[in-house]
Length: 242
Image 1 (cartoon, rainbow, N blue to C red):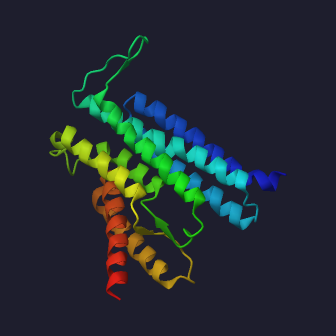
Image 2: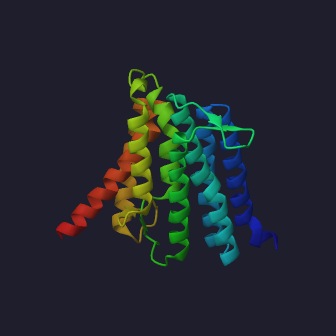
Image 3: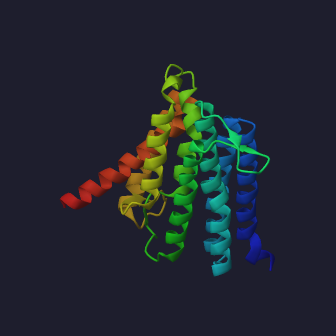
């Protein structure tokens, strides 16, 4: 019984840290949000890893994983984008006859949450996403979104914060929603020697990521996700040319 629920323990940790991410966004502590989201990705990896290692994969665990992911990789980035819209000047007003305030335009940020939900539902129904992903993975998308305020406010790019405005946020939101559900293949980072192509791309990705971290420290994560996208697109182009 304990062995069967070890993966579910990491799924629950993923959910809890996602809830903490929502709280940190409410406090506008974006650095904490980024760290908490990275923990969510780590726990999301561990639940699948131990499910395969202990051979206790189940439909219940699969559904539990997706329900946790919709909070950590759907609600968290959507809510953060909502807050960024508000910070650019979209004032909050009372919501209908309820006694709390929202910004109606800023609700557009939750398009990320809706798109992540659709992406996760598609993933659950797919049987082919073993060595690659169809559409941009929601964990990678979440890390990208929550890293944006850190990137623009870092010491290396401190003069670019002025560009974090409505047009920029809208473009990022639309691209995020599109990428998660686009019919393109994204590589799966893996140490599986049996898939030589994926293993090669994974090594390239890890080396470039290490270089970016050394050069840009906390601002590196946004660039690392961009590198991941470029490598995946390069793989697509090479595959079509063959």
